Image (cartoon, rainbow, N blue to C red; front, side, top):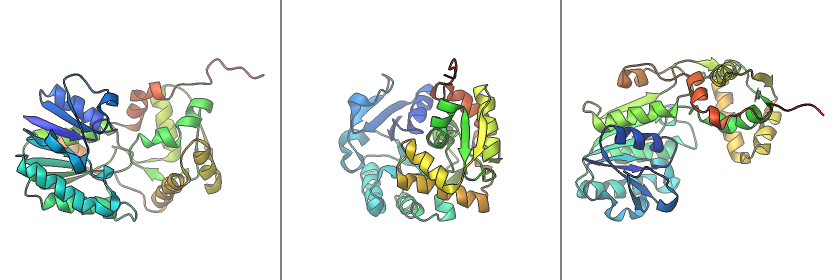
Length: 290
């Protein structure tokens, strides 16, 4: 059996490739730049995109589909065209990665994702939706610069709750849906295993990294300026703060689907931090005041 992975170099896709290889599957990766893919040698890397998939679908039985790379105004159209070619090539199962924005109808993201999901559902293929909430990996963008340089986590919403999910759990749910029977026609909404305030998240990161981190509250404007100063574009900074403001008033819940599918609780935020310790080094170590 050959499985085509779109987005194979991304946060979830890269882990999924390893999980599928470990399960003894033949993996083909679709990428626009094979020379920079840096995938394991056992992976067949094919150049192309969703709109010009070419021969990448030949002999493929199952597909991991990432709608997030689509033109937001053409998500349904492009998804339909891709899956029509997939069905014609003999593909029989598709697992897509969307997000819980679909279920909460968050403006700016749910429309495109739901449009893609609906095209998947109409494809005639066996389908499963994987809908993660907040990625724990977002902490690298939000707090990574200050953790590395100062050992500090800063937030405009200290008591806002979140349930960040480890990307490895997302990939393993996708792998289960690709490889196992019993997932057809299901939509899995994924979260982490514990609901933590931003203050508590700072403590979980400290536990995982094995060192002390300070927590400092900010105003909304200070947080926005800090994000932009760290390299986050202004519109993305506003988007992140909008999420946090929403969570402060409408806290997300711990969702059961990760444990239902994998038969175990999801990985904690402390575990995520330990897994990413190399990306969050203590740059203050050995520094002395002048």
